[in-house]
Image (cartoon, rainbow, N blue to C red; front, top):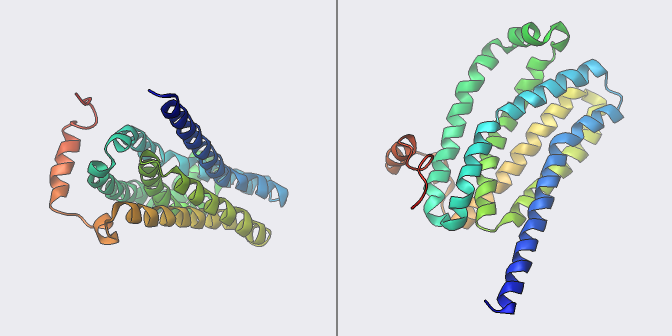
Length: 239
């Protein structure tokens, strides 16, 4: 390869890495800066403890979407167009799976949380309920942001992370003094919804599919589901 080609590839590599680094850093800040803000406004330690436990529980719901997203990243980078149907069905899977996993907590969480964590964690149930929209949003975001990164649209991820950080900082600054940890939970959930909404918007624009196609099952879903369940994608490497 010529020196110009090598130089161009190096510039593209470092440019991509720079944007990806800042996108991850900003999103990490958006999911953690609320802890710091709660301390700055002198919220009682017991309330912060409830909030932190709920945040950790919310993070557990992101393990599976993150694993699936990590698996599909190289496939997206190599063949982004063909992977789109798999991305859309994974999004629907995550929504259904979250509903199944969340239902027992919604029904019995008010009794389970104090039983498991202790009576001092009596605020966890309400905080978790406030976080539920954010759980769905984060699951969708994990899959779409990986697709966007795979097609070299990592700048969009940087933009959506910046949106989340601005909302978290601004809204928490106004609302935490008034409503404490409840405000932090509502703000985080709203910020994740906005972030995911922006990611969905750009995903639709990049792929050309409409929103109905994203949320509605089609005849091909059964074939794709069988392919996934038969391990053709998950456990067999490409030749």
